[in-house]
Image (tube, rainbow, N blue to C red):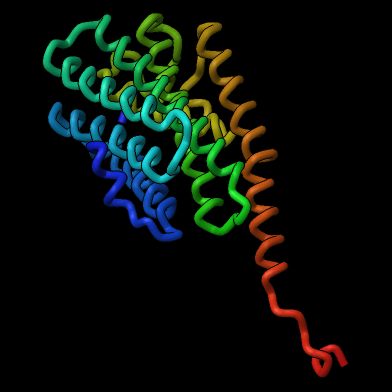
Length: 238
């Protein structure tokens, strides 16, 4: 589970491009994730993702649950520190559950914020894409929880069976976003009923989100750009 400190929200530009930077940070972490090695790097990655979540909360100002979500993210940060200080299976599960709650609450807050916007510009559309990437991160945590409770929940086929936790989580990250995009390559296969159910739900939620919410944002953005275009003069009409 990947974030910075609560003050990161003040680092985000308060202009109309705050979601530009948030999306760039999310994409950067996904691209850099395969190259992260070592315990210290894993800790940094976890805190980087928590920082991104806090930045997302800072970008959606004046939401009712913002303080609660920020407090929940800080509690999750403290739990991450304990997880690496005192490795324990139960603590690892608790951190994963807290991380899933933080991502879910942040995504819900962002959707509420974006759906209330009267003016839909490119930054608003990119904010919707940030929520889409948060969905992939949420299901990644759910997949790792399923694998923790049942080591045979997934078959990694060509990747072998004796995988390190780091390699397994990296493959589950890949599987989560591939499932969200409904691409599917067959190298990671959900076996247990819980894993299959999670994969089905991710595919359904991802498609419904694109078809209904993102399509609405893009449609409003295109309509607004068309409405803002200057009307042709009489000489041009002639």
